Length: 416
Ligand SMILES: *Cc1c(COP(=O)(O)O)cnc(C)c1O
Image (cartoon, rainbow, N blue to C red; front, side, top):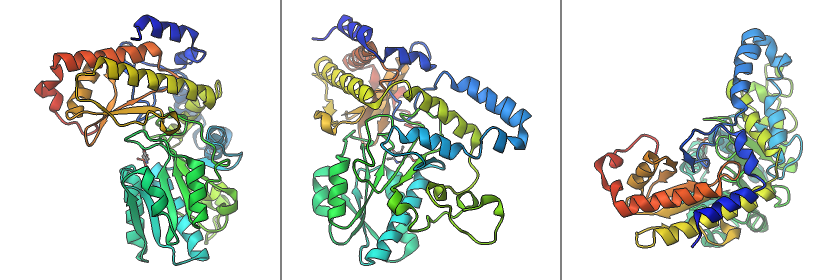
């Protein structure tokens, strides 16, 4: 049985432990929800002050040029590109993941319509994040051209679901519920063999697991910056398009920021060459600027080191919970196999919601996803091995005592 002393020894040897000081985490909290909202980088407070007081307050409209506001989507995109296996000038940070998904879905369908208009199926997983499915459903409804979604129930069903009728395979690299990590290179190759294009949602992979978009030969990718990238609540998302596909078609949200000559003030649209055409309109600069503070922490390490610690943390949590809570009805839904595990661990429990509320009261912050899923995110930048031990111990205490059965833990909040 692993002891707390052993975990403290692991922390003492951890070459990433010093990075915790780059985050402003409250005392007495074990934060296991960086997969939903990353912790605040310590540098973000001073950066926010600078943006508000100096850039907005003193610089006023001049700051679009003097503070580099207009160039932020591209500049941040270049920093982010290194974490996802993309190159310079291939990524922009902009809009939301839902909106960027809409852009790349339409673009992919347009590319396919030019090649083989008989392809009308978008393949995805039934357990994909709802907004991804809703955006695809809404798009099919909007186009009224016979597009439909084909949803598989498990990753194993994907190969049989992709075929000659498939236009696009739209998969979230790490499943938000189960934490299942797909083999991006293998699935992309399969899509291509069938003549389909592959869209990857990196919401739970960017900053969480090594991603190699170019190595995997991916076609399109989108993702969030407010999860593992620690960009701040609702911070803008990102979009990447393989260079050979980028300039073939227009993305559908043809706003002035994506124009070839934004301040030419022309009456008709001409898309910018390159990833700049995936911009639409004016960006929330105060939020966008803070994304950089999160990205700058990643520059102090690399994704291989983070992956190594992430797997050690999730292995430890799984083992401790399985030992400490063996007599309780907890079911692990996250794969044990490293090759298929992201950076969060999910357990099913019939009363998962109440359990998570009881954990939060004890300072262990995870979250809950319907149905029955308790999610625990492990962020190697700021989670320690002792945190993992304490979280498993507190979960055990809550289950043993039955305190979670108190009525107050059943009150449903708007955000779970
Ligand atoms: C978190 C998440 C989103 C969120 O989309 P928003 O537009 O930022 O609300 C989308 N897709 C996946 C897979 C996610 O995990």
